[in-house]
Length: 179
Ligand SMILES: [Zn+2]
Image (tube, rainbow, N blue to C red; front, side, top):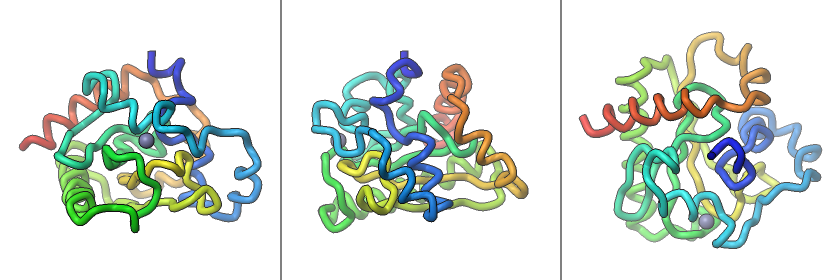
């Protein structure tokens, strides 16, 4: 089950916190985490090989795919990844860069239709020093935001997401993505 395989799946709570609290990076960087996994151990390389449900995949493109973060900062927290195991935005081909942008827009539209957020955070942590949880494989965070939700972030970030809720969210977003 996904929740028991957490270390192999995208986005750990600390890595995500570093999107919002960069001052914590020095502390967190010392923790022993699989931030530079080999391709065969990489959660973003692993996810597309299974079903959408198993991988929490919302949509698949030609060069990129979108999946739910196993440790969402907010409900609907998506990641847009390349299929290729590359680290940096500067590694992307023109096709990958274009599709990552398009899928980011699609993710925002699907989230908007499904959950009516008030705003979004978009972002990529590039390199371990910059806070990437899985630094070896590029992933763009798409985080829907609601007024006042920041009050809950410290709690949410340290709580394992309930798989059933993630499954529901995945199905909901996949439906809206196709519309
Ligand atoms: Zn990978």
